[in-house]
Amino acid sequence: MDLKLYKSKIQSSKTIRITGSKSESNRLLLLKSLYSNIVLENLSNSDDTSLMQKAIASNDTLVDIHHAGTAMRFLTAYYATTTNQDVVITGSKRMQERPIAILVGALRDLGADVSYVNEDGFPPLKITPSKITKHKVTLKANVSSQYISALLLIAPSLPNGLKLILEGEITSVPYIKMTLSLLEELGVKTNFDNQIISIKPLTKSINIKTFTVESDWSSASYFYSIIALSDIGTTVTLKSYKSRSLQGDAVLANLYENFGVETTFFEHSIRLHKSTTKISTPINFNLSNAPDIAQTIAVTCFGLGVECHLSGLHTLKIKETDRLIALQSEIEKLGGEVNTTENTLHLKATKSVNESVEIETYNDHRMAMAFAPLALKTAIIIKDAAVVSKSYPDFWRDLESIGIKLREITAN
Ligand SMILES: O=C(O)C1=C[C@@H](OP(=O)(O)O)[C@@H](O)[C@H](O)C1
Ligand SMILES: C=C(OP(=O)(O)O)C(=O)O
Image (tube, rainbow, N blue to C red; front, side, top):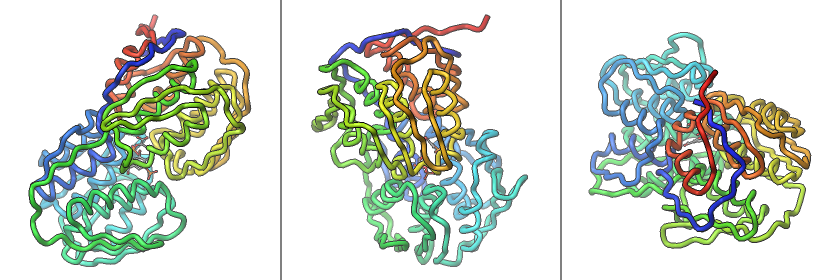
């Protein structure tokens, strides 16, 4: 399904309830399976969370997690400690190109039996029942924090807990801290000091505990972009958010001040308000702690016609697609000028946006959602728009509800 978005204006003062964070949801689903006394509220309705839920509930020996990176990494560690039969875990064609050797190496070092079904270093993986006997392992921390979170999630269920020695610059740190905070809330003793994380085993069973998942901040980013591209005075309210978030992407509230978007926190919601058109350029952000909002920010800058330099983007090359290449080719179709390296993106200031350009989304939900706000500037076509269901199935409905006009285009 392709969607044409027409040039639109936002109807001010609308409220949107965004689904729960997929990162929090997928961690909590794994923990709930290990410690049953957990009650979950406001779980994400994303494909990635449904896939996680389905995998954990089933006894199947072949598990397909499609495009869900967190499910791939977290379930690999989970099966390595819990399965009593051989399990093969696989994913989409792209998932089979996303590296997993660092996690597999760490699990093997700890005593797990994990092997590659096809190509070394990549899914699918076969996990054979075994006992994890060791409690100390060294792994590289500069490729994906998901490997670290995967190990941390199983750590309290290991007889002696776990000590992780992290090598290299640690990437996507807030996601590691999110995992540690959720463990702490369960009563697990954790310590993260410099390059070492220690987790004590959780011996006693836990008392019943309710977790209310905060709504997804990465999903909120598209509304930040919409307000940034809107007229002064435009507002939108998003639920259910809190000022003390576990999600690193909550940094949006600070970053978008640079684009004239003011955030007001209420008890369970945030109000975004376009307060000024003054922007101090060029924009220069290091996003190694918030990689999932890089596409949103690049497109906001393009729509505003401001120069930007984004760094810390090395993980973008191994996500749902190579996001640096995808951003460059789609922004250039729209008339922008982009230069990329292995970990940076530089966008020149551009005055206008080409009309009715077809945006390829490359099986990447964030490509579709990041480019949609350009409908405030000009008509735009989003190819394979259903791709958004990976993290935010209701995205198009919510966009329409605030005044973006859109129509499905059928192939000739
Ligand atoms: O742990 C998580 O929930 C995530 C960690 C990040 O991945 P990397 O650590 O691979 O950057 C992020 O991009 C992903 O969307 C979700
Ligand atoms: C990178 C992402 O997800 P994952 O790595 O979990 O597939 C994302 O949601 O932007």
